[in-house]
Image (cartoon, rainbow, N blue to C red):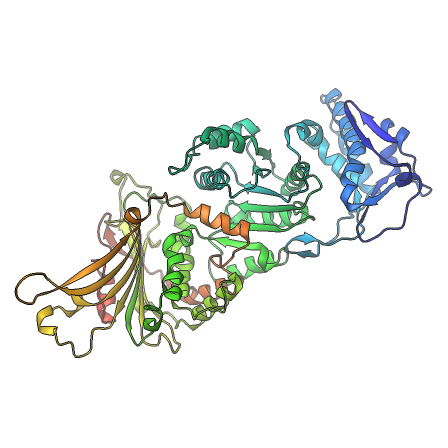
Length: 632
């Protein structure tokens, strides 16, 4: 027996309709009200109802979608034709239709029990009438209009679908899609990958492809078949207008993904590049309507992760009510830089450094992130400031990775366990150990000026970790925008040599002779070790020199963008560079008292010249803790 309409034919065995067999853990049941079936002659003529007046189809989960697809297409096609024929008639007829079937239908979608988003087996009943009504609201039938454009996976290999929610935004256009193409071009994405752009704009597939095509580039080190790879990537990129009802939009997205996935194992990644205020609605709709039941689901969330401890806790609680912790990847692109990975590599794979990694030998640690005039500040920054945007995630995560105890393995959870111990050990931060600044800018400076008088663009602080390894060692942090130079580096300064017999040869400023380990990300990525040596020639004169590993000289390769690194980690399930919920809470506990005191007392940041070195108070802060900024 089969259902045929136009050129589509889907087989149904007689036993599946006439002789229902007992449900098993892998079976699916489609239940459709007889009143709904009776409205469509094709369905009524081909599928007799059972005794209770409802049409019931039985079958295994593996061929469930295939068994109902013919019926679904017939109904949707019929609806689409009727809708086109009466588009000028009153809308009351459509509303009456929806209400009629709403009364006859029940919501059969249950709560998913999952293993990283993988739905468990079991008998399920799916009410078709809601999907029928939903399809009428769209301009065209979803399956009819789009089924031919998808390349269905049929070789049994696991498939991967990646959805970028907020696909027309600046972040998606300039960073996410280029990073996805770079991974595809380099062979890190499967050939059968499906890339979906989702937003509210009225675009076509070709419209999205033309938008992102201008941002795609091939690797400098291997440009073979660049045009072919780009063409293949764009052909596997699709656009969906989700509209203003995310529940309906996510259901459509799920249907599109299922067309590509076929019956193979299916994994999905959802990148939520959406405003903070839209995050909960999008994530909730996604969880209920777009997760696969045939593999794992992972979601990527952009910062900020709340505004303070309370708002972050509420956000986390809402997310964990829909997802498991291991499904959530809170991304900070600054943590995808090589400098971060080198922290643990240098320490744990080199015997020369690990014995020195404590208060006994290290005098202070400085973490510096300064952006020059080329860094544009968007409108969102005025609501968050540099503390919520950079310090909370990037700076504190850098400290945690640098100061943590050796993990028992490189497993992401083992590393996160050690990071959260460091964050919980950081001493309460006092406002007296904090310097806030804001650059002075005008319209003549050609920068975005969207800041109120209390939004800091500069933050400096002295932190202490109260544990046996780091007791008494100041961790000095400095993050600022609109400064004289773009610089990102970590500097570890060691104690002076006790009783140094060369003191008289070094000169008056003993600090200039301090040994340092420097990990630099910008302006030139490098690892440097500062040592004292004798200047060649007669006499005995000492000089402080740098042993230099400059990446561009040593390695003739293009350094991948941080988004490529982090997206690949998500695909691989490596979560050590993504904040876990307890890390998030510990970081907010450090900064929330300062934020509340700033708001309560309306503390105005110290002004500094745009293109300058930052507030003068930062130098007094260093002197207070017996240190000088090493980057000056």
